[in-house]
Length: 112
Image (tube, rainbow, N blue to C red):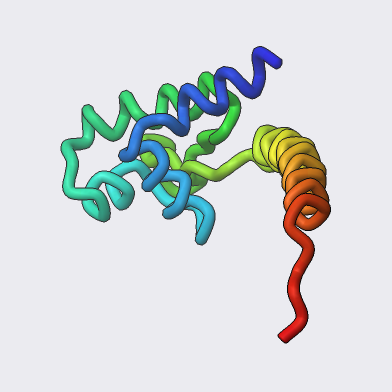
């Protein structure tokens, strides 16, 4: 589960989570992301570096201007996260169903 550890580590920061939210809508350049979140470009660069190293985002340069980097989300880490969450949901669903059955057995409903 080291990939999930990296994913959770990267998403633990509110700014990076906000970046993921923005990139979930469409690819953006770092300057647009920095402006949207009212942070400096160097700070945004550090956040984007964390997201890239975690495999959550990739960067490409524009054909018109190689200095401009466009960032996109990578689907695979989010698919892994979604799978893990589905497992957790199944576990807790089963636990809650068992608890409900226990409570109903001990305290049957009374009819009015």
